[in-house]
Image (tube, rainbow, N blue to C red):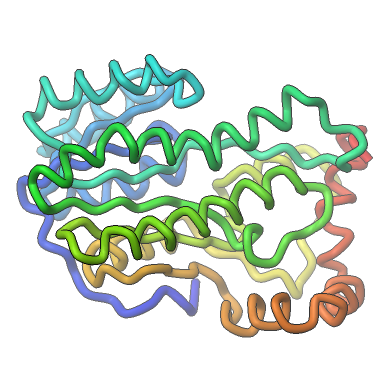
Length: 285
């Protein structure tokens, strides 16, 4: 179970409209179910229309208000159409949870330009475009909450995921800059930084089918923990919530102050070679 998720306070989501991108995936759907249980109306947006429809149907069957939407967050016109359809269906948008993503575990020398564009597009550019499209609605209502799901990879980067780590670091910086820009408005911005997620998340899927074992020193969190972090952000308005099983202040503090020491720690614990071994088994190292 994650130890560091920030202050926990239940948000009042009754009647709120939440747009979840990546809502058909494990993390997005788990968070959507939690928010729906608190009374939110959920717009499930995903490139996989079947997954979006399945998740929306499950929420509706549980008595919640939900609807599926197909979107390609790499296509600006698709995002425009998504916002239009969600507003037409629900009348407004109160909360954006940006959780769409995919991870490429590979030595950088093997990364193609297309994979580079994919990582930067999904994890950095698309949240920024989504916010730019939704922000006018939030500002007109003088309320709203942006929640961007980033990663601890953006704070303590591991090998074999340089574009992903760079994009996630950028998403964290964007979130904090935007939050400070909007400090005098009713719009809140939070960023979630999960560690390695068991049973969900891109790194977990990369491990599946390989002989690579997660180092004992690399304790994992669950997708329910990540959903708890999102709910916590909505309840407290905290700027950043780390969902990790070890102190985020220790990890990111050491990285900022003594990156060379972190290099040695990663080597000794086996964490530094972990994803390189995954990449090697996939022929990407």
